[in-house]
Length: 543
Image (cartoon, rainbow, N blue to C red; front, side, top):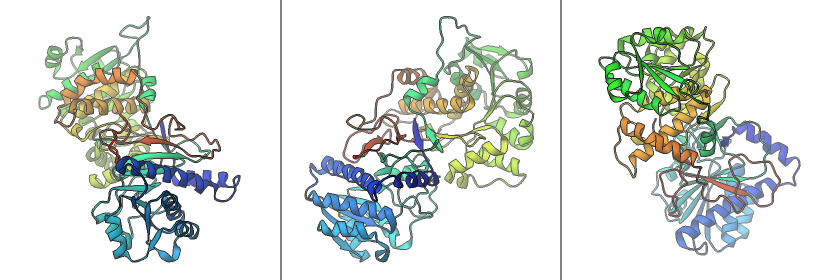
């Protein structure tokens, strides 16, 4: 599992560690890992470090200092290093002295700096660190708009990206690689910030960290969660999921939700709704019942709302009156927004909400009794939006989008690292709802059911799209058994694992001399040195 910590958590851990170490040790660890990553990228792209053109964009403070010290190490290996000082009066004195001692060139003229940047084989973004907020200041903005050099490496976080949330409130400098120190930051795992980070490389520096503010599942975590029948299992012990979906206008939603539910690990699917004839014709193994959820018989979880049309209100009320977990999606969310959080106030069983940002806007308006917020604004603040929903409705919220985020009322949150933009297709969310509901019926807690479903759904979308082709929701559902087998078959370790690499993103606090690194790359992109990224490793597309 990947762990991401807030700036406040990191600062506290750094302060505790620095109190026990000689001055400068923590920075030396970070710089060694940063320089080693840059050297590897240069060697991969050019065959060697010697003679490479490296530009250091140095802002004020320790972030600029990290970049300057790393530039000095590369200069000692024969690289031609030029440092561009964005704020000369506040440049890190130690880092600047080290670079000059290594015969690096220092520029303060921004026109000359911009020319050097555009001609570099590698550029280090040390403009703003994790303590910065807001977009790039005017002196740094031309670098974000300039033609790209060979490779841009961000120091800890791309400048202009909020490290705690992934929000990008202004101009930001897009990186090909981000080298994170000590732990991942939430903004590296959640769009839009994640889309600026490129491949993320973690350098362990020995921090003793508290529980993470944000986590992201990996193959072994999902494999451990997925239900598997044993010798004593039968269809009822494995769980029965009820699906109340579809209408005369949207009969296909019932078929797609049922398709997802059949592939989610529950022992049986019980369908209620107007599309019973179509459902049985397509899926003869499904149990069908006339009427609503109240008269359907015993289930272990309900999925309510996909394509529900005019029948969504009745189905929602009857499902919420039950004592089993309820997943609310699509038209069910529209009815819930009209009723407001009071509709869930008396529930003793969990509720899982699965909105996209437009539905999230309506839900928040229903909670606040005001006009809906702009969906674009909610998408730009995905983590904040998911937390708001979970808090307002006292329910687990799965916010679908370019990065799917799952949040609990307790404050716990997960981001989903799989997916593809090809999942932005009609009916894709219906498949996800059925899949997550089936996992609920099989006994998973809402956070685990939502996270595992989003993970599998994203992998299925990628598998269906192949090298990049339009997919349908039916294509996605058909790929679920294959990705289920892939996950149970074991994760392929990210490149860089072994030979001193950390096994996951959570540093163990062990004092070390040389930093440990681990890659978290885009699942469908090549790394800047031409290698393929590790499968399932970086937040992907739309769910």
